[in-house]
Every structure is written in C-alpha cells, then in structure tokens.
Length: 351
Ligand code: AQP
Image 1: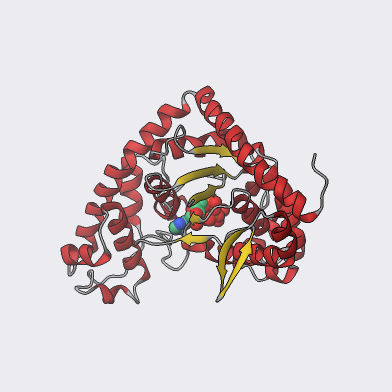
Image 2: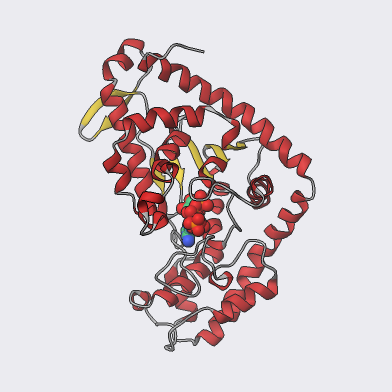
C-alpha cells in the first residue's frame, strides 16, 4: 500500500520554499495516500545543539502543517523524538551506511563549511536518521524539495544494502515483499522509496541571490518570505527582490540564463497553480515593476489565510500537544512493528 512520509525541522521561520517545495504537497497527497508528517526535532539539533525555544518551534511547525490543511484525524502528525524507534533504526543504519557515502553528501559539505573536523557527528549521520524516519514506516513515497534528492538516493542505497546483506534472514523469516532491484526481482524488507519532486517550485531561490536556495538560516530576512510575514512585509520583500534590468522574456526558454527572473516566475506559477509557460503568456515582455505587484498580491492572497490560521492554532498549545501525542502513539505502533522484524532479522533479542 503506498505510504507517504516527510518531515520538516523545527528551526527558524518556515518560508515560501518550505511551503511550495514541501508542505503544500503534503496537503495534496492526503487524498490518495496514507500520510505520516513529522516535525523532525532530532534533526534540528545536528547543526546546532542549543536552541532558544525548541518546544515553541516544534509547536509552530505543527501549527503550520494543520493551518495548511493537513488533517491529523485522517493522517498522522507527530514529532520525531516521541517515537524512539527512529533513533534505534538510525543507529542500525549507521552500521549499514559507509562513511564514504556520508562524506559525499552536499548538504553536509555546505553545512559543515570549511571546518569539517569540527562538525557534529550527528550532522554527518543526518541522512542515516532521515533514512530511518522514512524506512521505519517502510514508506514508499517522500515529497521533498529538490535539495533533498541526494538524501533520498542514499536512503535507497541503505535499503538496498540492508536487503542484500540480510536476504537469507528476510526469506527465512518471511518478512519481505517482492520488489524490483534494477533488473532483478528480489524479496526485500525495506522498499526502495521514491522521491516526489515535481512542479514549478521544487527549488525556490533566495530573493537576494537567484543562485542560492531560499533558506531559514540565511542571515538576511529580505532573502525569504516567511509564512508568518504580514502583507506589508511580503510586498516589501518582493519589491526589493533582486532582478536584472530587462523585461520578462516573451518565451519561457528566455528564463534559462536569468535565475532571479526564473525564480519569481516559478513562485508565481506555483502559487497560481499554473505552468511557467502560462505565466510568461500573461506577463512576457512586461517590466518587473508591473509583475512584482501582481506577484505580491498573489502571495498575500495565498499565504495570509495560512498565517492567520497558524496564529489561531498556536493560541491553543494544549490542542497542538494533543495532536502530537495522539500522532506519536499511532506512529509508535507502526514503527514498533517494523522494528520487531528488524531485530529478528539482525539477531537482536526483543525487548
Ligand atoms: N528553497 C527551497 N525550495 C523548495 N523546497 C525547499 N525546502 C527547503 N528549502 C526549500 C524543503 O522544505 C522541506 C523542509 O526543510 P527542512 O526544514 O527540513 O530542511 P532544510 O532543507 O534545511 O530547510 P531550510 O529552510 O533550507 O533550512 P536551512 O537554512 O537550515 O538549510 C524539505 O522537503 C526541503 O526539501
């Protein structure tokens, strides 16, 4: 049965990139999949251990999920640390994955910077925990932004190695499912999870630099539109967004060498549920002085109701905590089923 898993870290303000690249897709997938959405608090301590208000941030991301339209009664919403099986499986995956695989991760290189020897071991092992988040539910599909593609490939590598290393035990215990591994039909325990990365805004770029992704950790607040920005802030940030002096191209191919223009057109397309070609059909040849106000109006129209709903939900932290508690119980039961098999496969005594 297809099952979706995805997570968001409780670090800093959620921005338009998180919304268009991830959360909006989470909402759409509820129709046809069973979904598990997680606030990945254990991930948030890999880059920085001490946070000002981790409980508040965890509740804020949960409120954003709910405000965007995720239904916690039909699907599962919880925070990662509540289900210790994530960390348990991550440890096992640390023993499956190779150090060389981790060293090749571009997110690790970016976040560790020049002083790599001083990065936390957790930051290096981040993709192993992410693989555990996904595979502890044997999830088949993961909606993410383009920046997570490499981590999803690594998740498949970990699943493949585990399935190969333990193929005899998996068959003996009869806990596998039939799946294709390359050309070969095999009986594996963990699925080869597919990323769901599509649409016009899989990688929303900074409003100040069209070559860098919009990010929570960018020191410039003008670089991103936060989910909690009011109408004036959104309009100001779009007005100040960096652009080149030429008008918008009359052909979508003309966006290719113009990262800032391409980014703003992509954002418009995603918010309006259109293709980039549709946007160019309507705005091609026009100046940014005309396009930017239209974009700002659209962004406010789509984002303001979510921000208002988020504030309403956040006013009742007891409700948010209840959602996480209930989601954690349901997720924990599913995760324990997987871990019972994993312990048997490896030869760890049951608790
Ligand atoms: N700019 C982006 N465009 C599209 N999707 C994005 N995502 C993040 N940035 C963009 C997607 O949002 C989801 C949650 O991200 P996360 O908070 O778990 O981690 P992140 O990728 O580290 O987010 P940030 O905002 O970029 O934080 P920092 O500054 O810490 O690096 C993921 O699905 C991600 O793909």
